[in-house]
Length: 167
Image (cartoon, helix red, strand yellow):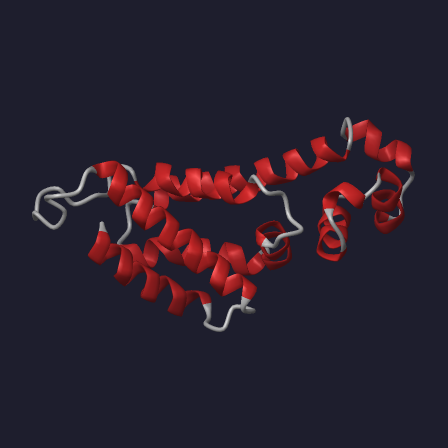
């Protein structure tokens, strides 16, 4: 069901997708969907929540690594779930998805700002977090929308170096 809704979202706007469309694509009965979800919005919310939880769990242990090694599992996850992220970050995706991804990333960046080396002496934490969060989400969007022109390891190294300079 989850795969079916993502495939359909790649083809048309979410508002145009019906439960019957999802059932047909998943080759199941409509009733099966209603056994698990209230409606298509509940299905999409649960799908997004599952990915956000997975990313959040990764962030808990990845922050203990250096930037490049810490970002590698994220870029591998984005690659593994390319269809989902490509669809959700496209204009046909859920508009609130980018905001949720951004908020998750900002939470992960909190506490990572270097205040000891005087690298960011004239900037408040919220400005640095907004800058770094938007930059990171923007790079993820660019990478996915352009068909992932660099492998995850190269992206982790490049983005890791940029974030290390910024934070």
